Amino acid sequence: KQEVTQIPAALSVPEGENLVLNCSFTDSAIYNLQWFRQDPGKGLTSLLLIQSSQREQTSGRLNASLDKSSGRSTLYIAASQPGDSATYLCAVRAAGNKLTFGGGTRVLVKP
Amino acid sequence: GAGVSQSPRYKVAKRGQDVALRCDPISGHVSLFWYQQALGQGPEFLTYFQNEAQLDKSGLPSDRFFAERPEGSVSTLKIQRTQQEDSAVYLCASSLVVRGEYNEQFFGPGTRLTVL
Image 1: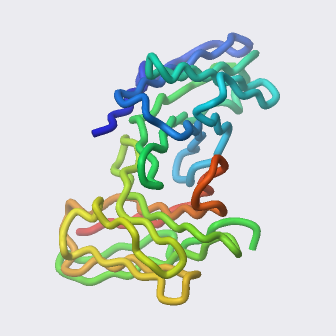
Image 2 (image 1 turned 90 degrees about the horizontal axis):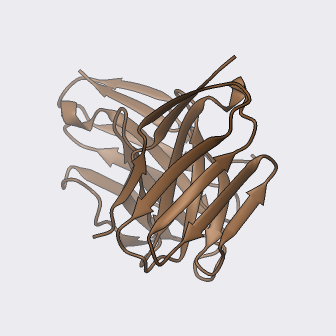
């Protein structure tokens, strides 16, 4: 059974510092990995999707890497801003179509 | 609409009541998913439709949970005889491509269910 873990569970940084969020998964036979952002009381906003054949994806200040063989992905957010405060979730798609999620990392960027 | 919509956004039910949660996927999206998110946790898969066919319902926690998508568009998640442990946010997602590489799932705002 696929298990996804996100460490740390919570992170607090001063504005301007780079953020590094980690995601690990137990079964490397995945089709893709998706990073989401969730604001309190809201749904999930997709940030980046990395296919299993890709090593990384970039969008603006966000960069996500994928090392399928070791079961790891890292989301980097450069020059953090208070508006980046949210919970970040990673999810993997393996056999079947469902996503298996990690527990999330709650990020606070202090002005 | 531009995105996935869900209604109601909030639902309070007394223990034992039946509830129905609605999801309107993005127009043309073939796949539709339901997830349950407990407070402080990541979402967990409940069930998946491809058009009107329910292809996977392995995540439904009990036979009190039932989902349908009769015309391959709008879906309803029904919970019978609600229990306190059913309190959670219920998220709906849809995606355009069933197979192949691009399978990005787009999520709705969720329905927060509180069972008293």
